[in-house]
Length: 116
Image (cartoon, rainbow, N blue to C red):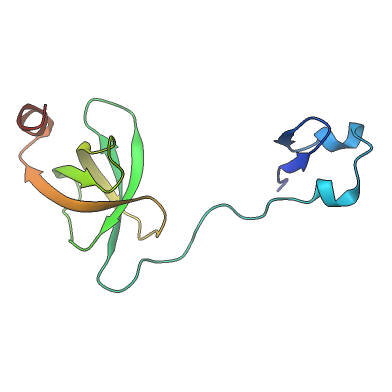
């Protein structure tokens, strides 16, 4: 698997751009693994969710166990991202958005109507 490297001469990251650059070797170093495979701390749950009416998917985590396939309004720590989401699967990743609270709804329409 090829990893992107920083190319100072082009001020960007790419897989093969440094071969043109006459750049020192340390500029050609990869940035390493940028994904997390760690599991959340005990008592936390992680989920892959999809925003109602959109293709947008996110990873969220918090201290409440949720039901796969159900719709929830997530009040996320990151303001502006709180919305109605369907829970797709449990993924147990530590990356993603932390929720302050979740509220269960019967479906996306009910959730969106209650949270305009």
